[in-house]
Image 1 (cartoon, one colour):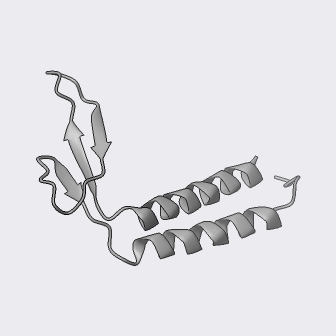
Image 2: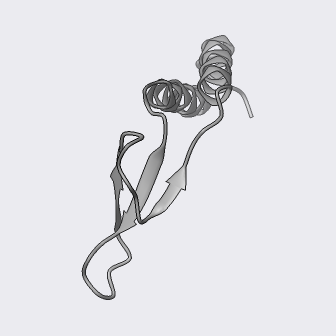
Length: 85
């Protein structure tokens, strides 16, 4: 169970690093319905104006997520299949 858990965490970090490699900024918009807490994500170019919250990840973010994901995946393969408690 621990092996699968760490493998899943590592793969998620690798995917998140890949997403941040392709995205310059992320804009969160609130849903137009009143009382709805669900937001949507939109990727905008530099010329478009946004009215939501904007997050611009630093340049080091994708590489650190890639490296942390790779370390966790490699660690998950070193965990024995049956860990004695």
